[in-house]
Every structure is written in structure tokens, then in C-alpha cells.
Length: 274
View 1 (cartoon, rainbow, N blue to C red):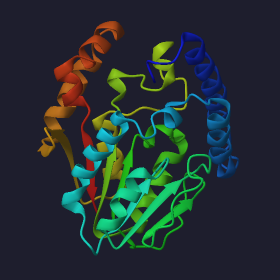
View 2 (cartoon, rainbow, N blue to C red; view 1 turned 60 degrees about the horizontal axis):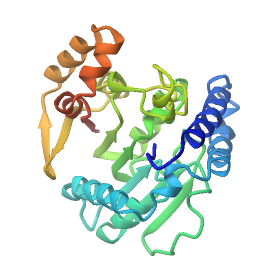
View 3 (tube, helix red, strand yellow; view 1 turned 135 degrees about the horizontal axis):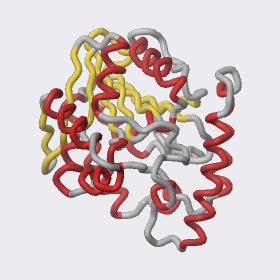
View 4 (cartoon, helix red, strand yellow; view 1 turned 90 degrees about the vertical axis):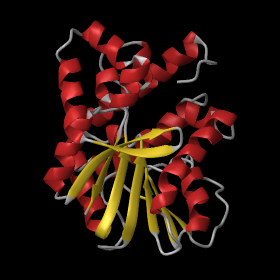
């Protein structure tokens, strides 16, 4: 959410997003084959002051991109096949492309991807939000930043299974998502106690670790970025912290979870190696 927007603009964004989210929540699996694209195209058409538009090219946006690139660089070589899931305007994938053999950007909406510059080893793949249009065992590193929470809860397992399918043996899926204990993290943060916008379900570290293990990842770990350095962190203490915070009353839980130190402990990346 952008602080520069007026209360009226925030309210309009909230109403539009809640309407579209309810459409997705009530939909059948067969309908969602086309609905993700329709919903996000409509969102960006109806909310012209959406941060995905207004933050393009800003200093803050460039800082975030630089941090993501530093995070990924240890995994990248000139032989890497890279896949970004939910690539948005594809700025990160385009930045990765010169460093790897092939960089794929997976996205449901055309609204954010019009007029992209032609690049030899970059490819945009429009998809239905679930099925990944790539061969088995073709990707070394898959990455998503604030994507999984936008997928219908009934589709999350299927999407993760698709990502697992396209990963090579030893391939990695790196997932960053805001922790539900300090949420909501979509536009409804300004209005509701629970996510009611297009964050259809928010997740904890524990939630994601369980999903990864159910899919079949051989190794799962959590990482944090501290002063541009990756720090692998033990899973069990992170889960114990979450369970302790989750026992608190809502108002206290949110206050604790959003505090400076705890928010940095909770907002870890979950990584799986096939």
C-alpha cells in the first residue's frame, strides 16, 4: 500500500480487490483456469493508482530489486535455468537474464507485461495460475516473491506440485511470503483483521514447511537476509516462536508480530531442494 494515496483511493482499491477476491474464493476449480488472468487484468485496469503501477522505477523499487538479486546470485551461474513465478512487470527476471542461460517469467496478467524489451535469453510465459508450461526437470532455480498467498487455497498444492515437477533433481524453490501472524498484508490491512483482498490465504513458516514436505522436497530450510547476507536458520525455533505468538489474543499477537525484531524473525524465506 502506498502512503501517498488518499483515504478515498485506498477505500476504492479495497472495495475493488475485495470484490475480485470474493469472485475467486467462490469459484470452482474448472473456472479458475481462466479466472486468475481475468481478475488481475481487471484489478490493474480498475485501480490505476495500484502500487504495481506507481512504484515502477522508484528508488524504493530499485532497492528491493537489488536486494532480491543479491539474494539469488549465489544460486546463479551461466548454466542456470531460472524461473520467477508471479513475475509482475518482470523487472527481476530481466535483471537475472544476463547472468544465466535462460530466464523465464511466469505471470497471469498481460497488463503489467506490455512493451517488455526483447532479450535473447528471457521468455515471458503467461499461464493459468496453476499449470507451469515447461517440461519436466527443466529448471534449476524457481523463485517467488509474495505470490503463494494470491493462489486459491485449493490450488496451492497443485501449483507447488507443478513447480516440483519442472525442477531438475537438486533444483531449488525459493519462496518469500509475508507471515500471516503479522497480517493481513494485502489492502485489507487498512480495514480488516483477516486478509479479505487478493491474499486468498496467508501462511506461516510452519505452514510452508509442511507443504514443501508433503510435495516431496528432500531438504527444506529457512533463510533470512541480514545486511545483504543470507543466514540459514533452524526450522524448529522458528516454528516454536510462531506457536507461542499464535496463542496470544489477536490485538497483542499482531502488536508483537509486527514489532521490529519479531517481524524480522517471522519473515523468513522457505527454501526447498528437490
